[in-house]
Each structure stands twice: as C-alpha cells, then as structure tokens.
Amino acid sequence: MHQIVFEVVESVDGGYEATALGHRIHTQGEDWEDLKAMVQDAVRAHFAEPDRPAMIRLLFVREEVLSA
Image (cartoon, rainbow, N blue to C red; front, side, top):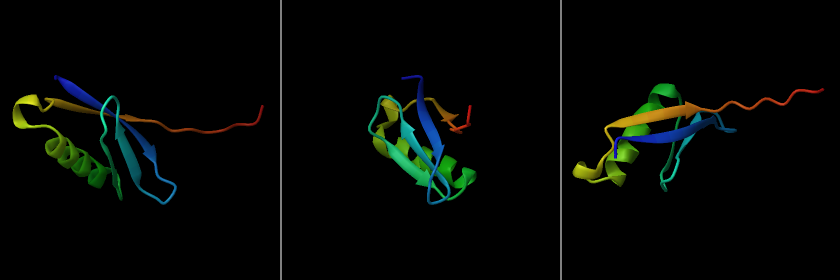
C-alpha cells in the first residue's frame, strides 16, 4: 500500500479527530502536532512493517452552515 488517507475534523470537545478512509483506524489529538503524532502511532500499530503505507495523507474537513 502506497498511502493511507485520514479525514480530519475539529472535535466538539476541542482538538481534532482523524478517521482512516477504508480502514478501521480512529484517533484524536489535542492540537495539530499531537494529532499528527497520534495518527503515525495508530498507523504503526495497525499495520505490520511490510504492509505499512509509505505515506499518510491528512484531509482536513471543515463544515460551515450559512443562511441563504
């Protein structure tokens, strides 16, 4: 596997939450740097060395609701 993609959203409790697309991996961090470290740890824990993705992509999703 060449890469794994995580969808990242702001947590309602503060910080960030990340969920891997196509895999059962979910983690969170108190700030952006903490989240990146937690995502790397989660990927290392989920995949054995030969199957570990070479690249982790973080896709930040921000939702805003506007009145028409």
